[in-house]
Image (cartoon, rainbow, N blue to C red; front, side):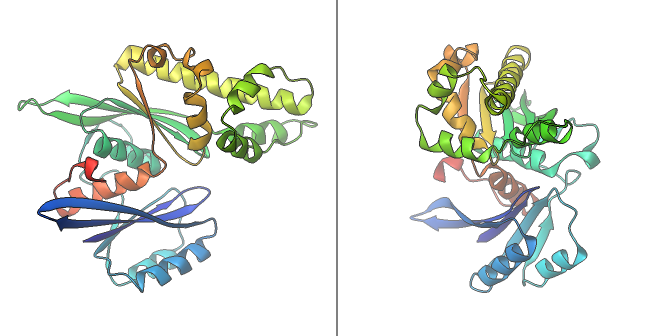
Length: 299
């Protein structure tokens, strides 16, 4: 069975395919990232070409944008059933969020993805994209001694690029800093954070803007993690989102481990999943159509 998942975010629209099959009597789940586009017209064109060659049984899409009616009409013409991803639909976890009609679907998908990948753990999901969100997947014990996931809510903050955009927009003379060169450098240079730590004092306007935003953001992330660990007993921090690679390099650096005492002491696991929202959409779809959840270790 093939399940198509679409994640339409603020910046990019992405697609991925899940395939459930049985080999040698064992159930397996295959995952395949497909394509992504900033322009929805290009995305829809790629989607139509792909679906013409594949036999898709069901699709699900999550969007944080307001889609035109023509887009949804085009989806419905692809020849298979689509499930709208909704916060008020039956979910595989419980939720105590008081305004589900205002809940960002990307936040919910991330929490569902965490529940799928780590079904017995308390997880703080950190989605580093246009905004940075922090969402808590809690656990409660049932009468059968099973741990059930409960989405408790979290926080919404400014993303990396948005902070520099705000500084440039709301001041008369500060220039705009682009996050892209920094993200690319962090991906390519294993010692990126060591070098930045040694040059952490801004010596001109550009470097002052860079170090101001980075120090502020890292301080925020560290405070959030430590707070959720101390007050809620989280066992894992799970990063996702477009800027994940930037923070993955940071979290692996010994310089910053000292900023997260629980991490330095080995009491808190750090994980990174670039495709977490897709796993959440898959988890949601299986629950909606009554498919058993296969062991995520099969991925």
